[in-house]
Length: 120
Image (cartoon, rainbow, N blue to C red):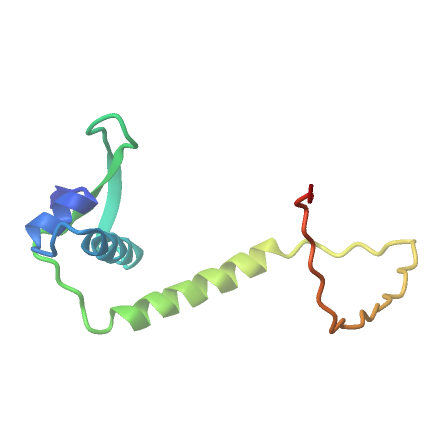
């Protein structure tokens, strides 16, 4: 497992040093974290600015072909379990619920110009 900041990741993989390349590398690392091939392990202070997040990435990055289907099925199972646990028991209430009212707002085709500069 190798540890990289986003800037280190761009240099190691030859993506370039410009802003666009750093943004692309950050998105790639976040995507790898999302599928479980990388993870955030800490922060590194390099100067006066904000500390850089350090990611731990598998040394040869290999993405299995059916990984997307596995992740989607796991997420669906997790949502089903969480909804079953999150349902509170329904207790009958003595108060009658008020009927919902809808309010229609007419669209205005007039434009308005406001100028706050005072003329001398």
